[in-house]
Structure formats: structure tokens, C-alpha cells
Image: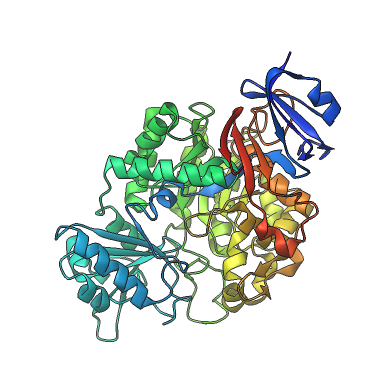
Length: 537
């Protein structure tokens, strides 16, 4: 039986049970035919076999991004103005981009921006309602922070939303010393405004296509979609996967970014409709039901058990309360769903662990694989409970890469157990890696850098150094463990005969690359189901 494609001359990281390293891999149809030596694999070549020479570079399973807002990321630079630090280094830059967009659009249409980090802007603060009003007096404006948990709005937008502080929990609608709105909204208030910002079906599809092309260029072949803009996004994802607009395999969490009420309605619909985790095919499948328990690590607005180290009056924002969390987790668990939650601070993490423990005690279920997204702040006792409950934490080491210095300031010695991937490994807890893009850039090497060095790349400050990992451990977390977190380890996540031919070839041998220089590594080829979807050559 001849192979359709063979990849030879590589350092093939199989990520099988014993982490074997081979030289070559053969593909037939959409599956891996064989893995072995160059001689063994060349023997499978026929007259029409395509030969790819890896030239000593790493050949590995296609990378799995286990937590990404795929559609949201794809709209950046398209229907949404990208104001990440690489595009806007000051409030002045942001205001200039708003003015430029306002000049192009009819009055009354939304101007949408995302990606700024106030702590990194030259002014070290958020833009204000007055500044945005001046830049766009005739358009509603939404300027979302990189974490997507908060944003700044102008007066026209606030009037559309009918925003009043008493409508929301304390700390969600920010006012100045006179009681006037500053334009900054957090958590539920910000999500409420997001329900009013409209996207056309064409914009959503354009975003999915854009995200697909970028992810393939980064060697990512599977993505766990952590939430976008409601039912419209689900329809678009399914359509894009079925039509071939996207090749990256999607595992879609039942969650949207439009606020607690909207998300509850979405969850209720799925529970009543009789759908379940795993519905779909290898291109698009339903994932877990997801709750949003607290805020962001860098906001900072995550719910912590004790105050922040830099501000004794701050403990973050808890969006869900224990009783309602336990009720929802139990309902989803009983219905057969995998369940997960955005839980960053240790108060939120503990709340989700308790909810899962209680659901399992009442209704035991083997191999449930319930997850916790981010699961940032833990301690040895929490890790032990996570292990005993069989929970899969989804870690984001790229956050260390960009926020390490801030984390040291916000959390003090708690960073020793922040994204505690080494401790998970030692405890026998399976963790996978997600970029949480557009919060960070989706390049997996940003996460590799954070996991290998535990350094803030810009400032070269170490954050939780004891959690550093070895390269093969990071590879497994970004491949096999990602597949395991979506119940798909039998068909992908390692290079073994019979599995889907999702393969990434890198630009060099990462086993020989110094950890501090891992960022120079890029994808050279990306294959999904035996089809070469990206080639840098």
C-alpha cells in the first residue's frame, strides 16, 4: 500500500505513550499510515507519492489550542480595529484610529476596537468617555480591553445601553468622584453592551476564514472555541467547517460573550434540545457547557480568596455565586455534558471544584473530563482536589510571557502556584494549553516560552519559576492533552498509525533550541487530514 505523502529526514515527536522519536511518517488518505525510520517510510513511496524533506526539523502532531476565541480573534483587523500594543502604544493612537474609522462610516454605526492593555499604554490608564466622545461624537464606540472582560464606551454607546450604576453589581460600572460615568464598564455591564453591538453574517464568516488561515500558518490544526457572539457564531462555525471555508478542527464550547443572561438562555436551549458534548464530526463538534465565574488575571478582576497584593481593597469580581454555580453544573452534568468554567482567581477555582465534586457525589459518572478554563491561582490542596475529581485544568502560559511582571505585583507569592503546570504534572493531573487569543497572540511559541522559562519576555522578570517545564512536556500538553480534553485522543494528538494525519513541521528541531530562543521557531508546513493546508516553502 503506497503512501500519498511521506515526510522524511525529521525529528519526529510521536507523543505516543513512550514519547518515541522517529525519523519519518507516511500518510494515506486522511490517516497516518506508518511512522518509522527514513528507510522504512521511503519503502512506502510509490510513483505518485509526494515527498516532504523535513531537513532535520521537528515533525509533530498538529498543535491543539485548547482555549481560544477563534471567531473573535479572526475579526481583529477586519470588522474590529486591532488596538493591541503592537498597533496602539498610547491613548492618542487609539483615538486616532477611532477618528479614522469615524470618517469612513455613516453616522450612528458602531465603531468597534479590541486589544488595548491600559497598564502597557504610555499613559498607564484606560481611555475616558470624554476622549472618545471628542474623537467620534456621531458614532457609538466600543473599545474592549485585551481580556474582553471590560471596555470603554462613549456617551452615544452608553445612552444606547441605558447604562446606570444601580443596574449592575458594585465595581462593574465605573464612575468618577462626582458620580459621573467614566465610560469604563466591567464584566456583566460590559457584556450587556456587547449584546447591542451588531455583526453581519459576512463579518463573522470573514473572521472565521481569517482565523483559520492564521492558525494554520502557526501550525495549529485544532481549536477549542471558548465563546464568541451567540447563536450567529455557532451557525457560522458549522457552515464554515462543512463548506471547507475553514480546515482547523473546532470544538465549540456552549458559551457566548454576550453576558450571563444571554449565556444562560443559550445553555437552557441546549439542555432542553437534548444535544450533548461530542455532537458533530471531526471538523466541528459541540464541546462543554461553559460558565463565566469571575474576571481576568491582568485586569485585574479575578475573584481571589484574599486581597490583591498591590491593593488591599481589591478582591476581584465574582459573576456567579456558589449556589447557582452548583445548580448549573449539576444540571449540565446530569444531562451528560462535559462542564467547564472560566475561573481565574482561587476563590472562583475553588467554587467550581466544589460544584463538580458535589455533582459527582450525587450522580457519579466515569470519564466525565470536566474542565476549568485558566484555573490560574491554585495551591497544593486545590490541586489535590482537582486530581481526585478528575478535572482537566486548561492553562495559559502565554499570560506569563506578557504579564509576568504585573502578576508578581498583583499576586505576590501566589504566583508560585499560578498556572501551576509543573505541579499538575507531578500530581498526575492532565492539563492542556490554550492561548486565550485574542487576549494573547495565538502563536503557540508564546505559550512554549512562558511554560519553559516562566519569564515576562519584555521585562525578563521571572514569575513562578518553580513551575518551569521541559520541552517534551509542553509538546504533550499542546497536542495529546488537548485532544484528551475534547475526548479525541483516540483519533488525534499523537503521530500513530490509524490516527488523523494532522501534522505540523517546524522551522527547526525544538529539542535543540534554547528555551529563551523558542520564539524564533515557526511552522514550516501544516497538514490537516492529509491535506497540506500551509507551506512556508
